[in-house]
Length: 510
Image (cartoon, rainbow, N blue to C red; front, side, top):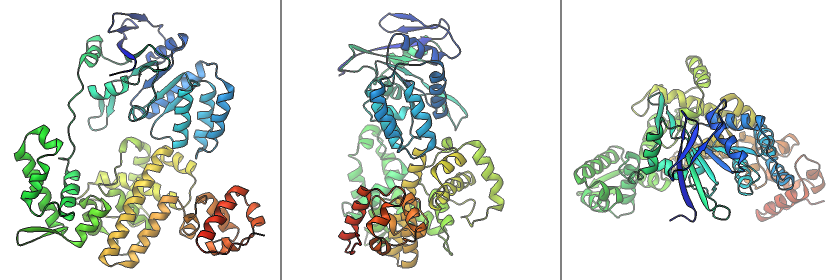
């Protein structure tokens, strides 16, 4: 069911026209770029447009080229509020470029942007300040942002094969479904922009989405869920596990019980070899290691890799590199440029920090090299390189940095809990401290200060540079002195003092 009728069409590149399934045709003026030709065509008709492209760099380039060649009348009143909100974006790139594009009625959206920038762009599009947004498919997943007309690319680059491949029908339908705004439009229009020919385009339009396939058969899911059923007591034998899993969506959909049984037995064997479960009189029992692994929701392979290669002598960089090698740290070479990878390949043999082995039964040399880059990003982050420096040096987006940070912090914190249960309290403490540093992007001397809300990496460093190094120092600092420090306004100072009082400190308020 749709609140607005959907009409789908295909851009015919040979005759430079849009052919809709309902029989309509629209000729499009030919220019330098077919995508921009279609967007300009829509702008002339005052049609708000969402363009889905499967490449971040291309999305940014199209937005900038369009902004340079056209100008859309923008309501300055609504715009000023959004531009002001953008001032709190974490990078100069976002503050300057996105603000300039907003003023021209154009935007771009992808997972590499910060949450602030994405929120501003989404709000500007909803308010119809932006007439065009170029986006990667992340915008189609879970965000309610419809447009009168949606232009959809059905081709994406596949790094595995090194060529452009077609997306699934389901992916196309998800993006096409963004066409049509219930409060404004009688119909929505979705146009495929890069089909090889009309036949290929209409095949997408006329096809049904592929069947939904359950993910529980994936190796990680099986390891995690099998361990969970044993730890919780739901299953006490392999037969119990088989009985539970045969009612999962994956099992019911595939109908291949023999395959299911073989995968489950394989998962049980892995957990036995990893000493996460044991057998006692034919009954499966979780070990202490199995229990804490399940409670942290880590992949058992992450714990195995860590325990096999954990440092004999602790170093921040070694741990960061090891964590980025784990299967729970999902990295992608698509977001690391070839130039950066090549640079680190040259550095690898003379790298100044101790690293895990270059290969293992858990990972390949290529994984090791890619993880070396991710570890270097994290190392710069915890040593308080600015976000602009990190993004420029590694050619990533702020959204990428936050995802890298959040995932690594979670894994390190979980490993700290595992070390505590295993009895290595010193290593557990070091890992706990490192997880806080990764979460906040600070050196070790700022860990205590960033435990307070409203004190992040920048304010913590300002305090330390002014001799305020602990919460006790902070409590003893007069109100008037704090107000003289950059970014410490009355509201922030009051919030900080309130937290100190809650923790039992006597605050110097004069």
